[in-house]
Length: 399
Ligand SMILES: [Zn+2]
Image 1 (cartoon, rainbow, N blue to C red):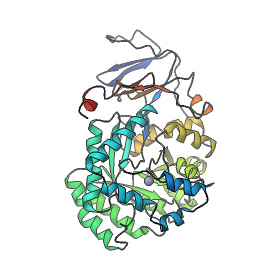
Image 2 (spheres, rainbow, N blue to C red; image 1 turned 30 degrees about the vertical axis):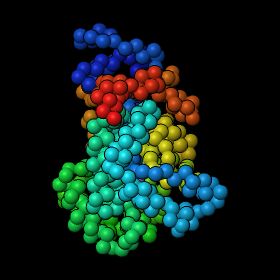
Image 3 (tube, protein in one colour; image 1 turned 90 degrees about the vertical axis):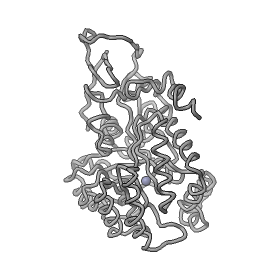
Image 4 (cartoon, protein in one colour; image 1 turned 180 degrees about the vertical axis):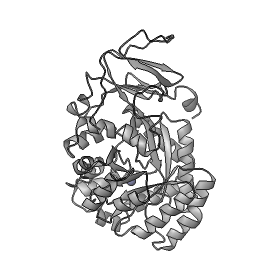
């Protein structure tokens, strides 16, 4: 993860949306039809944000303000707040409204250098509203500056009106088969946690998803050690996410697996928790570590992967090099897209961020500002001189 290839004065040639050449020599033998001078910018791969909850309605800024004044998350949840309030607002929103919300967030993400993002359902919590969220992700993907990848997280929480195990039957017997039939998701996720889904319930949901072709991911060991990391490794999940309370056993299980340890330090930061995932232990043990925003209205209200990289280095003691690999190639690996995106290599999609900075260290060193000047996705500008240019064409004209 520390082993970056760094080129000075490089030329990148893009053909048909993919990298055709990268190197120091302008005489590539490839006919150049259009040139762009990056004016000494630093080119890095577009960020891959592999854990977000984008399709939601309603913000929770007043709850946040109550937390700032000392109320606990539990007190707020007991008064009808927390995930339940987002479930109410998301159920009340039309599919069109959710599409607009996702596109708006995707535009902000693009301005901060993200070119591929995962997006989860999980605020519908019944067949109709889970499918509505996933259909909204699909439609938003058609007019978003980002490439979106969908995950069904029906096992995010129990529905407020029905906190019993029969909801697990509904997920397995109705929601997941409907998602698979409509091909609405690539992945299936579950929140295994004390007071939410048990290890056995999570396993049942993810095995059912896998039998329908949905690749497992898992919210694991976020608020307590439930041995979630080992479960993720056992199920050959694409990722085990959060891991603030992962045990030594869980670290070893991930290190021995192809399951990516997806760390979300913005969540610890935003919840004002001193507890971050043990990134150093995971990396030093040999686990594949990625970084994501966890963008959601309750516990991590940010679209910025730069912010996440700053927290990864300054709070979790990852190196800048490790953080950059985690925020690009390793996230792509967990989304099963590492052959296509996540690094600037010949043959891959030309997803490139140009930083207004002399080198990549400025991503952390020059913190708290947006250094992203230009963004290309599939070789096309989506952001130019810090302004979104995507959508000036087809997509936005239709709105
Ligand atoms: Zn999450």
